[in-house]
Amino acid sequence: MQHNKVLILDFGSQYTQLIARRVRELNIYCEIHPFNKIPSDSDSFRAVILSGSPNSVRGEDALHPDLSNIRGKKPLLAVCYGAQYLAHFSGGEVAASNTREYGRANLDFIKTGETFFEGISQGTQVWMSHSDTIKELPTGGVLLASTEDVENAAFKIEGEDTFAIQFHPEVYHTTDGKKVLENFLVKIADIEQDWTPNAFVEETVADLKSQLGNDKVVLGLSGGVDSSVAAMLLHKAIGENLYCIFVNNGLLRKNEFQDVLMQYQGMGLNVKGVDASARFLDALAGKSDPEQKRKTIGRVFIEVFDDEANLIKDVKWLAQGTIYPDVIESVSATGGPSATIKSHHNVGGLPDFMKLKVVEPLKALFKDEVRRVGASMHMDSQLLGRHPFPGPGLAIRILGDLTAEKVRILQEVDAVFINNLRSWNLYDKVWQAGAILLPVNSVGVMGDERTYEKCVALRAVESTDGMTADWVNLPYEFLQKTSNEIINKVKGVNRVVYDISSKPPATIEWE
Image (cartoon, rainbow, N blue to C red; front, side, top):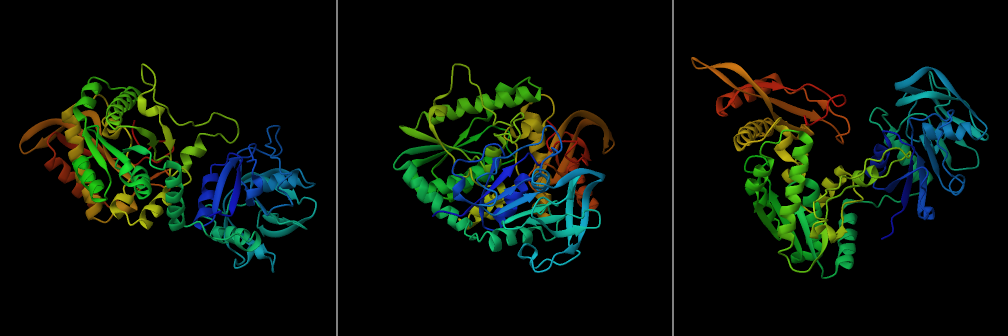
């Protein structure tokens, strides 16, 4: 089935992925491409959205898209930088704003009878984020909306389906932002809302069948959402020809290897569990540098996975749970340093499994869409709702060197924390949570004896995508109970602290 597509041209805004997610929430398929790499098949896109940008249209480094096949020929929505670009280079005027226009504002004027603002009332809240402002509209510009400080908050070009707004419809603070996008895409561009999880499953399974035929595919399962949903899609397409390998690196949560392995087997997957914990811990002995720990875990995983993949005869494909943000981030919008996907280097050349052809069933999806696709295949809600967990596992939550005893302590602490989040119905309100074992001993008193034992930090954050995150204000009673339980039950710990740092400036993980 051919979906109507929307093209989002990225000028480097921090919100570009958010625009795409809002469009997808309307069950409309869209793709993000750098502003200077417009796809050659641009005819297949029914509408185009220009993103914001940290750049200024007045600067020497102004970003110039080639809109010759778009403007006036397709419905076009220009957001923030895009709106200023249309004004500045088409007969209008953009100037530095006297005050940086940032934060909440209200549309105190909306032109009546405009489809673009249908169903949106005067006074609606919008979110501004720019230091330039449009002083004069471009040739053919018609004013559609204003705020108290921004006269030209929205306009259209006469005789074209071209619309421009200086506010961000994609952020939550713009109350009717989704409605604005819906008016533009559904009512003006006449795009069908047919991009649904069920349609994705149906089409992807059919595509995988024709792509893979009777070939064998190997997939490394991690216990996380992405690899699990990828496995189910492949299982639907090729059944027993999918060979899943679930490696225990000894750094998973308490009992996770056994629990998740049983869950996978219950899902009907052809899965093999490989307990390589001793091999990983031996390789990590004495290593305390975070980067060294990551590299060691990556190297040993590749060795273990390669050994196991070689036991399967005639494998042709390697399946990966790559999702859309990984794909986008490997291409930089503004030609700056691209956040390319990390590659593993193995002494003696590439391991055999890396010479296989790669299949990535989820590469068009965002994380929230992956969960919805999993739900449409009736996958277990607990598996789909799992918090993100770092690839190196507890290794980067144990600061300093690793020992089996430190892993045991942290697994016990983590189990108390996560189980309590579940029993207090807080787990699903948190994006990610975990415990960190600090390289600090502190004095305590237990019974009548002085102790000199470990300190652990608890971390819980809320986020939509992990790019930014705020610490969660967990109830004091919860923290009190959890701290008491950890200190009383986990031998070797006598102090618990709670991390109240947001990202930025801190990161979610400590290493």
